[in-house]
Length: 140
Image 1: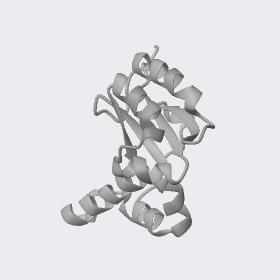
Image 2 (image 1 turned 180 degrees about the vertical axis):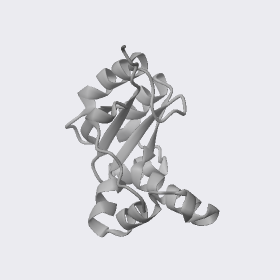
Image 3 (image 1 turned 135 degrees about the vertical axis):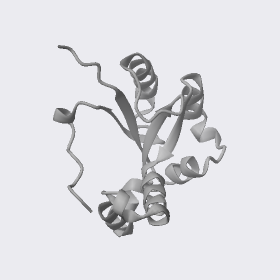
Image 4 (image 1 turned 90 degrees about the vertical axis):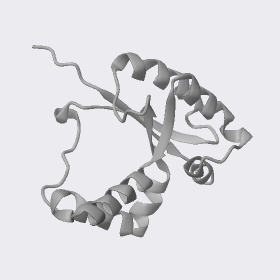
């Protein structure tokens, strides 16, 4: 039986552009990236911010319901990891964190020419197949 996986694109953006992208600052040096994202109904979410949002939500709602709270909090409090995740961005398409192959492939192809330029250092495409991805740590 064939299972349909979903996909996610992640970008590593060079500083200082990562700070500009994180803040949503209009900058002509990001215009090529922003144009592609707009054409594909996509937006960026900084992974550090996503982790911090998770921690804040867990602490407001009760950490017992958030099994990755301790791991995520330790990650964002580690200076080296913080630096890494401040430059790492998840691409959301139509406000979705994962999306179809039909949405992923054209967007990834459009972004590839920007990789290794001044703005984007790396592009990776992940799928939801657990065999291809490290599993989250158990418990908190």
